[in-house]
Image (cartoon, rainbow, N blue to C red; front, top):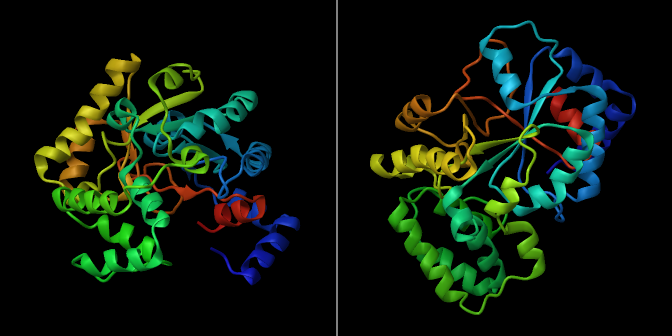
Length: 313
């Protein structure tokens, strides 16, 4: 999170038009990365203001069009931006989509079909919500009881535990999830949790305008790919595409690496299965870039921060 001084600098640069002009001069394309919209981290009004700013100053294109310009080595003007949403959250349809539809702005939603089928939260969302429900002393005890290969880092005990869980192999991670559920057996999701964590239903996805919303794969269940054995990795990457195409009756060409993490085998499987893939690595995209490792810029909830990040990814 930017410091107070940084925010002041960003606001001044935005007010003077400096960051926007610099962003336009960079001469390379960009993909924006969003997750949830409509919660305390990114309220609907903030998203609308940012969207209006982007539409005014840049060319908002589909991910397919951006990839086409990349691989076709077409001349670009460097103001192209594609918008993407990870995790398949319900608020993408209830909050973001109405604004996208009204303004006719294309976007890509990356979905996890097995979670949709089960109506389940992403494992890290559930773990975080349950840990935040517990007393701090219990959370500290859970952290002390876990054995991770690397030192735990994070702004809080909860951050550190979730980050550590991302490094575990699937069986061990699921054991930790089970222990957290046991400790938090009295947890009941509040409306604020459901607004942030509930995933889309198949009916909600089918109602999205196909000409506006591209559907991509985010694996079946959102595991961290390098922690999986090869057979599970293949299932998560390949079967998610097949599942989405079978249920939705549309081609799925794009993939999003969960947490941005991949290894050589994951990249190989993605190359065999998809047209292009996005990461969480910040950066811009030049003509001829590697479309299996496309960088993205995390979206900000203010126009000033967004302009600054577009100018200095």
